[in-house]
Length: 296
Image 1 (cartoon, one colour):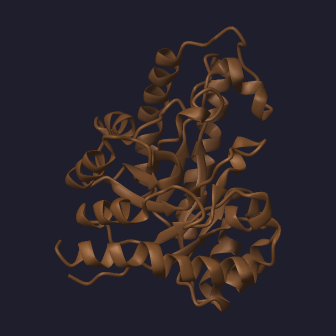
Image 2 (spheres, rainbow, N blue to C red; image 1 turned 90 degrees about the horizontal axis):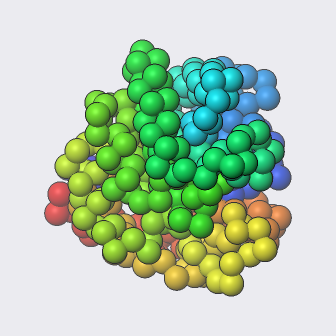
């Protein structure tokens, strides 16, 4: 079995770069893939696809779709429209993987600039609406050969960003749909703490739903903006060896994205960021991927 595990820059790590700059830095660093955020597609997905291809790169994933928890009809319709647009963009970029951050409580929608019922704190109902919207989106995604990739987020983001907190929850939500249409991503920052993680990763592999692997560290103290508490691999508390080994043993051989939201890293020279992430990936992540993968 040929193993790849190519390294990918998720452009969330370099938020100050334009699309063209991110592509150039990624190619100059010798990486094979780039994970794009949708706000960079200012000239359209087709133009972005051409620029990525011209640099000899491939798109590992598109971030992001989701935010499916609105309780009102207008909010639900708007979410479906926006997610169908994201599916079209992913297809145009040539990636089969659309990362889905499913959304938080309507009561907290205003925290991210949205609108919602500030009295609606029913997390079970919110998860139910995610399932309903997902069922509506799956046929459109399948038509475009795009997989909706559910991302479990750390529980501290349950109120505002994602009512899915564990990989098992994401897999349960994916279960009614074909594995080709709905998958999951393992993001070390979000799931490292889960005592059921190894078993859940194995389950994802058995079900054919392991669609992505994103790596970065979990830093302390938590930043004033909790979203920016991620760190470069090796700077925090994640055991990359055990998680990487589980991912490889589950059969994953795709690109590995580095996605870091951190003020210092985000604002430093992108060339330094890319060089450091290559070194840390080679030291802390790749050996366990390759060692476990040889047993698959």
